[in-house]
Image 1: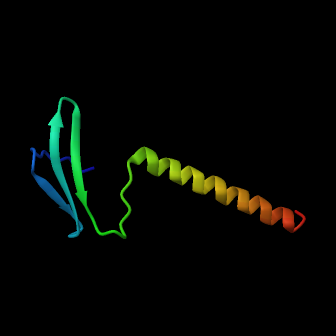
Image 2: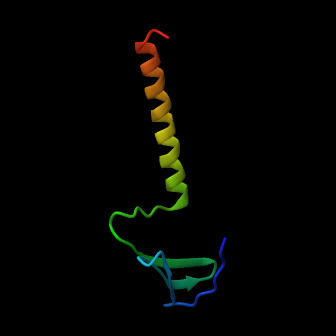
Length: 72
């Protein structure tokens, strides 16, 4: 993990096309802005993990349905 220090209104660039800017710092909360191409999804980690779990559950269910249709 790369750890950087940034102040309000300072930014960092990721992969030449994603810019992350510190918008506000209040106590232990930091508000950030992210500029990225539309084709790059940006999620909060907890939402991303929920999506991954839902996709896995869906895949597992599809696999079970396919096996049942084969009589296995």
